[in-house]
Length: 116
Image 1 (cartoon, rainbow, N blue to C red):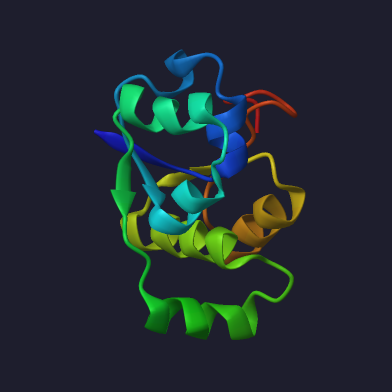
Image 2 (image 1 turned 180 degrees about the vertical axis):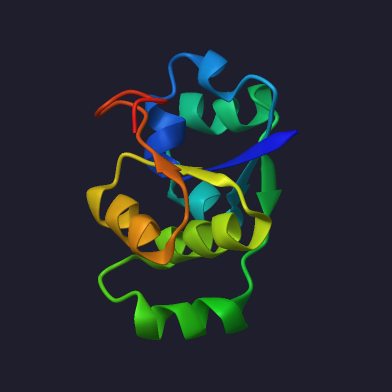
């Protein structure tokens, strides 16, 4: 089974859950904290997204090499790298950082899932 890590923008823009069909879904607790919209928070439960606690030690190390990204962005990027998952995001900086690190990344709204 393949897996996907979703950042906040992916959860907000994922109107068609078929993009994730057959995938184990993950995000981090820091992304969950960013989601203020009740529908987005409900989507986490409805889609069965597994919320993984961030690791402060890894986050601190990533902050030195991934300047310009938020702690939540760094947490999902490190999680995708560790689990070998595709990272779904519409954040341009996060998408570019993932590509530089060799993490497979796809966009949801801007470009459509599966087109990049």
